[in-house]
Length: 78
Image 1 (cartoon, rainbow, N blue to C red):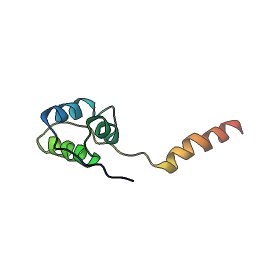
Image 2: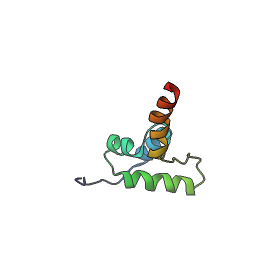
Image 3: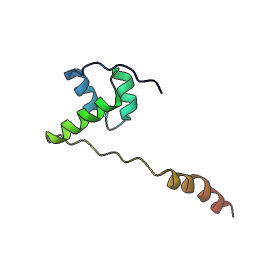
C-alpha cells in the first residue's frame, strides 16, 4: 500500500465530514477530500470531544456476515 502525502485540512473539510460521516466510510471521505483516513478520524474525534453528536461506527464481524449470508441461505433450503 502506497502512502499518499496529505495536506492540512480546512473548515470546508470539517463541514464535509460532518455532513457525510453517517452515510460514507472514512476511507471514502478521505479519498474525496484528498486527505488521509487518519485525518478524517482525528477530525471526527475532535468534533465528538467538542460535543458534536456523530454516530460511532462499528465494523461488522466478518464471521457474522458469513453466517448470515451463507449459512442462513443453506438452512432455509434444507
